[in-house]
Length: 136
Length: 109
Image (tube, rainbow over the protein chains, first blue to last red):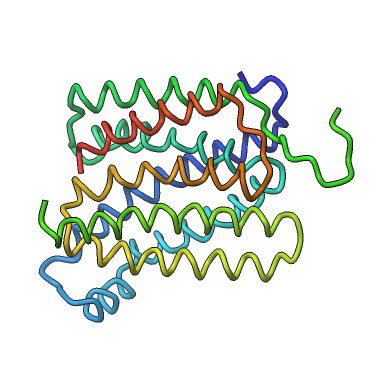
């Protein structure tokens, strides 16, 4: 698995998964701090004064910049599928951090995602051949 | 299924298509005309967020979120057709497992 993938792609994908996991958990925590506020404008104004929400926006920016770097060196269909691992990491991290529980169905889902990512990782990470270039 | 629920599902599925298109735009940015494709990608993501909000006004999150797993199909199909990436059987099998798994994990929603 990942034997022919450049280190920068592996690190970029790992960063994408970690950033997505932290973003999801922080977002969930930030939403919980909104209290009884309702309405798009009121929620937006409250969120703009919430350091955790601003942190989430910063994480999203980091995620976007990292994702653009990953796409420089990898197929979209490859990288996007690999980042499905964030479903696994978010579910796993939410147990100790948010006190949530993983059901049997979710456990099976996690196993299926890991098997799927393992299969995708066995395929070529960059299959696009620009017009006019010969395949290796 | 009520007409309202069907409308919500259509909106949620449309979001997965927009996710695929937005991702393709960002990938196109790596091949040239970076500013144009990046702007189109971000605009599509914002539109998706608005449409998803509308979908959530109709559907429970437990219904809308698993539908989001379809974005893996959309991204793979668009990568093959639009970006000319080679999607072999192994990658399709992996995507199928991921979709099934994501739908199961999303039962927490």
